[in-house]
Length: 311
Ligand SMILES: O=C(O)C(=O)Cc1ccccc1
Image (tube, rainbow, N blue to C red; front, side):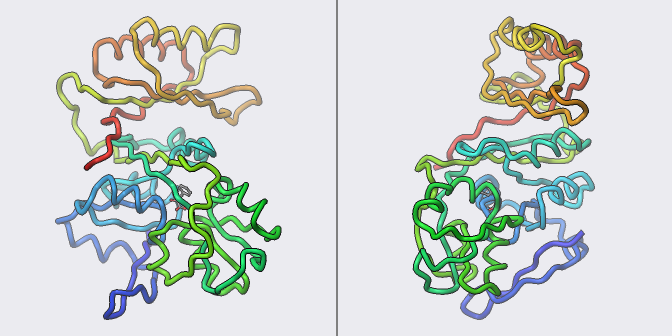
């Protein structure tokens, strides 16, 4: 597996990047490694820095799927992946990989306010932009700005916001949507600030680890959340009601419920449920045992401390 490696000049300005084999890092065991959707300057990187501070070696990867694979194969200790946005909703690729991949657990969450910038290597008027590049989520979160302020540019989805900034280097009359962090990394010009439709736009990220990495935490954990996925066994009236009733019976507070198609048959869904509490609390075990009996597919993704902004 390869990762992005960066070089900087004497003034600490980003010059270039290349792909390197991860083996070069294997010898350095002092730092824990955390993979994220790269290259440098993505919102995923901001989330990883916010969550871990200086405590990990950050490894930018080419896709969210690579982040899962690197955690699965234990080439990195952690991964940070976007899971949902306050405007655009779920990040489907992450939802699907959480369903499909084995040996993955969720060990943390992190919420990042998203402020989008319109960036280019050229000094363009907004109406001169012919091609606009960014991650699908970023384009969706700025749809009003794009419609009202730009002159109908061609929209090109990229693997990440930072990837868009790399691509536009070679494309005339082009711009990218990305974070403020990226401006200095790539020496970009800011054409417009704060262009997201909602001023309170924020994205929630999951911190994932290999299931083998952690032993059980003893005792009742306060201020924890747990995430699960379940698909009802039978498609008949009241199935979802009965599933949710198990939470009500034990006074468990749900914080999120989302459905995704099972991809087996039209009309069949899996439910992604987040709730307050630790997976080994007595009441939660009782509710989950009951829920598992009603399910054809059941998976506990993990328990993790609720995100709290650090001072
Ligand atoms: O492309 C990025 O920067 C990402 O980390 C994915 C993303 C894109 C837009 C909002 C939040 C996360």
